[in-house]
Image (cartoon, helix red, strand yellow):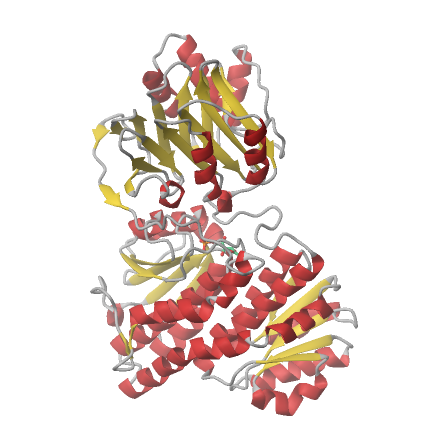
Length: 608
Ligand code: F6R
């Protein structure tokens, strides 16, 4: 979950490394560091906290050197201290690392028995210690790396420099992504192509098990067996612009507001506006009509997009659909049917558990389809087919626009499945597509209510616990609303299927517990309202999210209400996602938390 960068440059590199790290800060932000090779040997600057602390340190104490590596950290082993911040150096070696060395304890014991003295609590120091020991035994850098890589278990990406070797960097990948950027007489390494976008768009992605020996003018790649291999170079589309907040106070606010536009971009890919039907950009590698089951795996918010899709696939395409969180699925050894389709959903396309679930499904002979936002990601590259979402870069750690774009792509896929399985007539297809086409405009109407929603958010910001209730397609939105609120405001929140309330959670209700009821006026409206009445009877503070029709009947029973445009029930999750995002956002702003980079989290979870 950390971000790593390495540059063999022509000019002093420290500032460029910080520039690249800025684009990787979404991967972790509890400390950062840079090391360069200077006339004094290996020199480092490291600082606890956001990258700006490292930038100010470098302004006060600049670093010379045209070869360097850098790191932004999301702590796994060892607390957030300057000592534990990367890069880590032992002897003539300096290392940055993303991932986890699973056998670090055994390796550390072995090294200590051999006389090594450890100065940090990190697993990474084991790598530096092992390399240093190999070099003390007389091995040249590349032989040392080869020997050490064979001893490491786990998921890792590494960039390594060696004292006195200004024209050498070694990078290795086993799990987390690693991109090599080709410059003119310069060479770059980064956790993703966006980090390298200010310097080059000529990118080679290392495959799992690869390690690369880089000089200013050359790249030699070896596979896990040490055999030289060729990996293709591609032209990255990663934008050179560092995405900025515009007039917004936070990226999250900007990303919530962008939703009508990016939903439109996603629809443009999967909908034929003239015909009012769905279309697929490329030929499907499987036959929807022959499928027996869909298995959807994902993590967090992306898994709630998957859960929503279950309702769509089952109802519209009569296709049995299982949804599982990837961290559970990957070790459960679930039997999968012969004619099965596995769908993975991921904004980053790098989530370790989701990637493992994808690989398991491939091994089990499933067709695979990824709904991803980052087209160059590992999940996109390893899937049989990709349904891209067009959310654009999502910087706020809490996912918003990526979620609604995932819903949009999945909705189109479900319509397509219904059409190809013969469970949807052309007329019905057109009805659903036209509901989707209207969604961006309806979202804009909700965004106009932001001031009112902010007032409601202020009312819940003092609560200790908040419940979210929803039914059917809006049950996943209740889960998502609770996740958004807890992750950015740190208020404890839970989402429940409204009908499940009386099986336990209703015991939590008293006059201090706000209950957000998501109740579009659809076929389940009366049932949800009955559950709302049960809460009201026990003094719970109801915040009712519904449309005009729902308001007429029941607004008076709520403590506060938020009006959502009347829409086709099929698209209601897309619309109701917006007010729950805004409630979480404004509660967090009111409380004063770090909205874009909430504590303990990272944007891309590349460790399990
Ligand atoms: C919550 C959030 C996370 C992610 C999850 C999966 O706001 O963003 O729950 O949805 O970590 O990440 P991706 O979609 O990158 O696989």
